[in-house]
Amino acid sequence: MFEGRSTRILYAICAVAFVVIIARAYMNVKGTDALQPVLPQSQVEAFARQQLDALQAESFASDRELCGIIFETSDGELGVSRPTDGDEASCDISYFDEPGMVPVASFHTHGRHSPQYDGEVPSLIDIESDIASGMDGYVSTPGGRLWHIDHEAAAARMVCGPGCLTQDPNYVPCPSDRIEPSYSVTTLKQRFNDLRIGC
Image 1 (cartoon, one colour):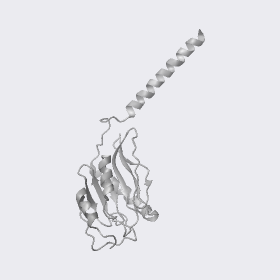
Image 2 (tube, rainbow, N blue to C red; image 1 turned 60 degrees about the vertical axis):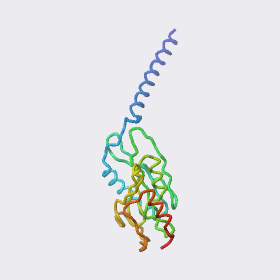
Image 3 (spheres, one colour; image 1 turned 90 degrees about the vertical axis):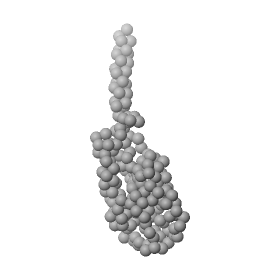
Image 4 (cartoon, rainbow, N blue to C red; image 1 turned 90 degrees about the horizontal axis):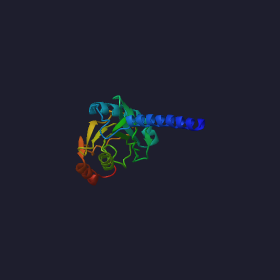
């Protein structure tokens, strides 16, 4: 009899603990409209610029792209995922869905300068990936340019020109290469179709 009563009390305590755990988890999980970004794009852009500038030297030294995700917390603060190592011309950003955080932008470097790559503008894959993820992106180049990819407009805009971020010491501008201040998917495709490798 005593054993049965103890078991019932133990079950009751476990049930209460389970309800508390579920309630806390429910409060922390983002619903589709529970946690929305509130910070202005200008603040996200300034944060992305700082993060990418800090990664440039490492990206040049390792000749690898480095990438990650900028997120906004429920307290309205910006944070960044741990940068992921890519290879010479790509970087796979692992999407995350953490309680109390909402992703607001991807970011990645373009690695070391190479005449074999059109590294001073975002690639088609860069734009298409951000469109598919439903999230804006920021790209830094060997020449020290910063680009903002607007996933809704399906376009890239140069935030600042050569040298506004840390520049690869081996960067050599190509005099015949005209880099526009913005590109749509169509105009970027046209650029790559017309581009001659090398300078």
